View 1 (cartoon, rainbow, N blue to C red):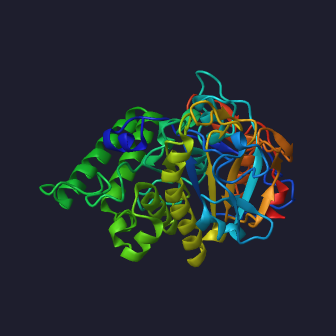
View 2 (view 1 turned 135 degrees about the vertical axis):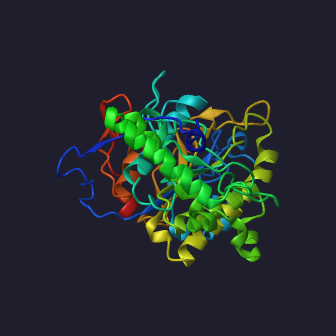
Length: 424
């Protein structure tokens, strides 16, 4: 269930708690205890993008492996990516590419669950997504504004609050921000509903809840009260209204990101970073190219290239990139060999993830896949290591114990270690 639904109908969830595992919990492999990033944006490419045709081209491989696209030089000598991403190539000084991310969950649901949480998929068990965990750890940051500590455009579709409870599901922003009639729903009161009437209803609700709590100390009631408080704050907050109004952006800036759903979602994410939202997921589906992959990528990759390069450059120009971690990932990559229907199938044993900002040293490639892009050749990275590093860069100890909605203590991550090359 979406976070928006929780705010609209007062769905009840248990409050999460936190306990630090030990005094040295923030130490990472590099021995650095300082937080580098305040915020993060996950660009989620649902379906599994082809690493061969984007970040890890194989020009010396056979034609049925290398595909239609040629590699191009980037702004960093020695790093080449596919010609499908020319604008991103010019931002490579800010970007680190992990070319040997590897796991063994090559189906969509388990692969997505693993790559969005850092926990191996377990049927019937939902671990919270990385966004939900970051939102949990920073839930007080935007308390007075009504803005959520975790927001998703258009939504997350999988994981959400998971074992932390529905309270930590993202606040979803559905719709296409490039549409002329786009507006974020439920941010204003009906025309015939005055502010004074709203305040009277709020006061009555609080009074009833206080009287009830005298009779019974209910965690459910406390959780519901927090939902209501956030909902009231949201519809009264000019800060929230302005941040979510993409029409306030100059026309030239909107053009720079691309007048399409993905580009405008990235722009809206930047606006929300500016007002301090700790974590945003921008989800873009349609990357499951089992057939006719090259015509599909020729349509889709220019949109990603335009929006992502604009986001990185814009964050840098505004002085926000150093404190904002941008991660571009999907659940897995694609097979080396092009199949009989001119597509590539699921492949999780070697694929690429891109990171920028947030203390990450740009202009580098970490790890390598083999000549066919099928298996790690050196420096493989697991999802646990990826998210151990993400949490550490955000100043969150991965060993932190979180109280689940069922009252159990579970560490943020059960294993993993920091990737020292990211900050070297």
